[in-house]
Length: 283
Image 1 (cartoon, rainbow, N blue to C red):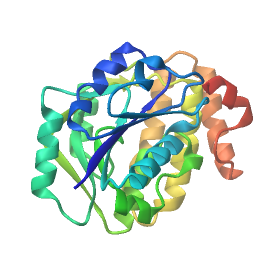
Image 2: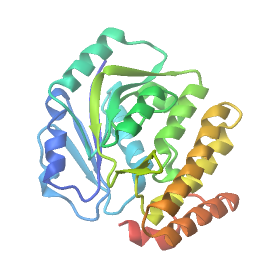
Image 3: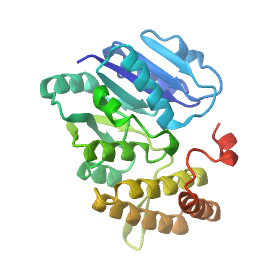
């Protein structure tokens, strides 16, 4: 195995540099794909780093494909994919590399750590659910990634990880979760609420994110309903629960509900990528 890493940045701060240092020492090379408009000197001159600035927000899928292409060109076999808000604790990443070396299997397309978020309830759901995993912290087999054609650029952001995992499994490959290894992953403005004795986890996603989450859920369901009906059914249930939580607890209710309706409408119109009127808002 020849392993490198990549991390996608967007208006990154010095805190992100601390996150990177939890895995950079154990990599031969790290590709930094920066979706910001301006080059960030905190990251562009790090040792063992190849830094690429996109000068615009091209989305997570395109950035991942850029990292995959660079890693393949340089002869690596496996790629660590990281979000800027994720980090390993202690020597967990070094242990992860050792475990993957020991347990390497030809049909495994993703080796994933166990993800720990700000929400206990969400962590329990993540531990039970192994059909799909978050992108951050994963070791991708690059040969398998190439066979699959990489990530779907037109999804832009939300659902990119789910689609790749389902595509992988549909083609007969496996995802192996290494529960001994924990990746700490920040999801943003997560809150826990109790209402009438029920516990709710709020992600407080913006209206723009609600648009992409909704639209891309419909696209993923259209691609994988026959192969993974239980996953698609669960995603439909999640959509209903999220609408309820928006109505009960979240701010910008009207804007978010309008974004959800637009996402469904744009799916029906087969609109992909990033709508022109949202592009400037995402820079």
